[in-house]
Image 1: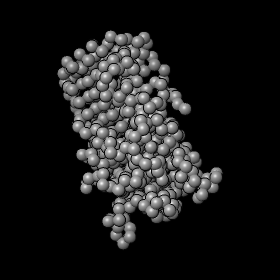
Image 2: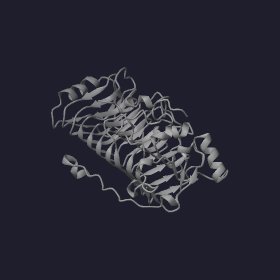
Image 3: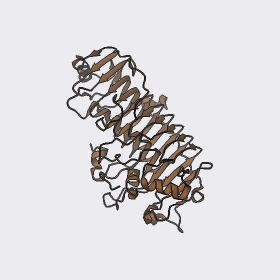
Image 4: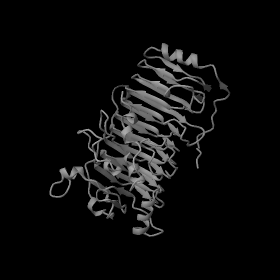
Length: 426
């Protein structure tokens, strides 16, 4: 399996936007989680639980009682059709603060898998990783690094990759040094009713087809919700709907490991769309994100020339439809000297950048009479919201508000429908 981040190692170390900011497009602390009710720490539960996971048969339900259990080794499950269930995300706590080895706390390589009602804390690597499965339910799981945002925290909280037919609901993700809730190279995914706080990226959908991200609370991250396509991966993503979320105050200082793909994400970003197509952002409350409420960017915004990609990778964001959101108080204090200067120059000392920032890259080969075909345009039907074209293809020489040019509509995407055993959860 090709890891999303490993496959993109060549993308690390981007030069600073106009250096730091637009590189980020490619791509204090504390929390309000409920106090744990897990009770005393129990140190000798590893063998019991790992034996249950190893000996499981399809249809088994593994019940983990209330308590705080500490582990010095990772757990794994490879059997299809198993449910792992705790007594509640604050009652059953699996602590990996003493873990000595392993890339994740719990690794699942199985289908028809459900995990619910427990917490995974303080893993030195990823919290919960699910690889190459289908019909996956992740429900009421809390992944948390209890020391708050820190570069030493694990990269991902909830991390399904190369999966299909996935439901992620009612979870809490806090403190991940990459993404709290991440879905990569997957298809047919619903991410709903979760809370993501104090991560570098709150929720990230990367190289994934057909994802609905809705009714989540995403606040106090560096960047709120990311919808990305990255090159050199076996699947490209498209058709993501981001709607009815609360995406506010994502202004936490970036604490990612230097050189990783998210290390330059600017603090103060609500939603970032990077090199992805057919993305809808609608009916969200997006506010108080100091750099911008919404950013739309191409691979080329990083300064790369495209030689790092395959012929099948399309670096341009196309078919983007932003409508009926409540966008307020964004762009007041951008996380970039260059953007601070742009804000002051164009909008005054007390002004703010427009709600939508776009790097300005367009695929010239697709133009018809000087314009993109209607289905490939960036369209904004969002009341007074404005979009600024940063003019990156021309070295940012003439940034301009270009709202009128994007006053258009696109056909809306159909809802994601889960299938098979998950059909009743759509």
